[in-house]
Image (cartoon, rainbow, N blue to C red; front, side, top):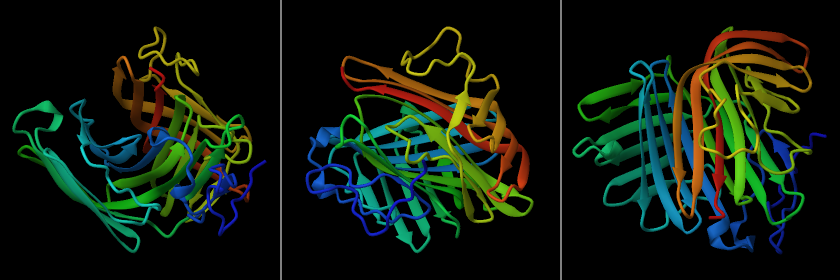
Length: 351
């Protein structure tokens, strides 16, 4: 049963347990971090932006994970079939705000940047030396992400067996993006006509072994802003899922959505499964029959870490969606070659 969040209620009770669970289309629940009773090493706080063009994309992530902070930049060139990913661990904690509307700044010996938010627009300035481990290849950029006057995806998910665990997430589809990024001697420009933006802001305390699925796409359909956000993997989603269709500024809520990835085995955290193939077509079907689509992969941004204390595997796949979506009033929308991404990510922090 989908349950709407109540406005004016704080996320956590004084004893550190989750006060409510459900979904909303606006950021209305206060993240009262001071009520967390778990160790700082258990807390995850992040702010991710994606600027997506047909030919290339840039992902920017600022995160406070446990006792450390990090900045990650991912640049993908689909035409040349390559990506450059780099993570810089910032020595001093990045002061992350309690909501998606505050400013952020960071600096280390290799990277620096600022997030300045004015109204619905976020101005991101960034730079990093020796990008991708290549001496002298630096990256710098200035991008402007603007939140449209539309509904958003807000989700608070509990865990049945531990009331101190939670997943609090705010995502924005259909953002406009303007700006550029310079890598070495090359300049890549993002324009409002050709680029779509996504923001994923979240806070949480999760189980040490976790695996999530997420897919998102944004653009225009019939002259109207259109996009969708679907996913699962965290906690008990019986009171709300993050599955939503956005059209003309309005959210249309879905029930469960199943990801069908060739060769995928849910719960298997191996870096490589012998029969998996993320570059073959995926399919997505909602339990209520209101979303039915195929995903044609273009590029798999694969990364993974396998060490003594940490394990991670990531497949963020970019490509085109074809299918249909049914709005609340029964209107059927058909879409073709709609650019977006779908991903599967797994982590094991028990080591």
